Amino acid sequence: MEIRKIGVVGLGAMGAGIAQLCVEAGVETVGREVTAELGERARDRIAHFLTRKVEKGQLGEPERDTAVGRLSLTTDVGDLADCDLVIEAIVEELGPKQELFAELDRLTRPDAVLATNTSAFSVTEIASATTRPERVVGMHFFNPAPLMPLVEIVRAELTADEPFETAYAFGERIGKTPIRCHDTPGFVVNRVLIPLLNDCVRVLDEARVTPEDLDTGLKNGAGWPMGPCTLVDLVGIDVHVHASDALYEKTREPRMAPPPRLVAMRNAGLLGRKSGRGFYRYGAEG
Ligand SMILES: NC(=O)c1ccc[n+]([C@@H]2O[C@H](COP(=O)([O-])OP(=O)(O)OC[C@H]3O[C@@H](n4cnc5c(N)ncnc54)[C@H](O)[C@@H]3O)[C@@H](O)[C@H]2O)c1
Image (cartoon, rainbow, N blue to C red):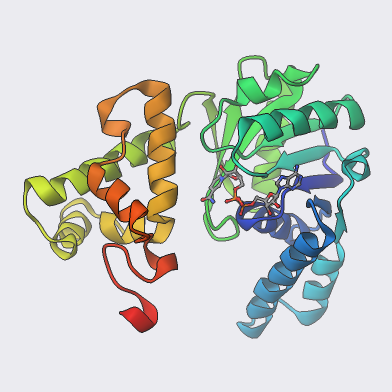
């Protein structure tokens, strides 16, 4: 199925990045936020990132203006009625996601593909709020979406082949490297990465190694492009603890549970790069 018009619901950290990829790839995009101000703020952020590309010589000024012009904003879900694909990137809560999918099911064309960017919920459970679970898929982007190449295309229990392959092809069209997987907790990357990072944090205490030495160890002994403490600081300690809790709840595997040291850091407001302090100190505090 050819995607001519796309809807992105929720223009926060992920949705704005996804909308940016779509308009850069030449796709007419409707972005839906809960208020006009939030929508405009997201459009300003997209324009700002594209302007940085112009400054770096990666994009022409007219191309930037055309790209930004492809994004229309709305607070009305009804404006997504003629979209071929809708990608949901709203808050990570099951109730609001299911409510939105039920609404999209009523409003969009029966052949439209409905995708969720959920990290921790079951795509199958979100799809169950619709009468067309065969047209619901997961499109799990990584943060920041414009820069991280991967998108996991997630097949839920009842997803049919055609919408699944449509989502895969669309991922390629907007410049990502898609991979196919089934709907299991953590999908592929988080299922592997979250317990691995939790192991790294436990080793800090077990082996009485410093964060600097642990990072040096994994970079030089395992070829990681960045050390685990640097990575957790970048992701955000709160985001990592939340993702670990969600995976632990689903799998009950002890390695998924957030290490107490990370929970204590989260509770103390040491959230990593964004708060100025995590395993390392950043910015003015550094
Ligand atoms: N941040 C990450 O690292 C990351 C990575 C991959 C996937 N995700 C997933 O992406 C989704 C969004 O995460 P985020 O980090 O962008 O969150 P965010 O809080 O930055 O953005 C969510 C946005 O959705 C808006 N919103 C809420 N309800 C809405 C509705 N009914 N209609 C339209 N807009 C609505 C909010 O106003 C907010 O701007 C979540 O499901 C999250 O699990 C996040």
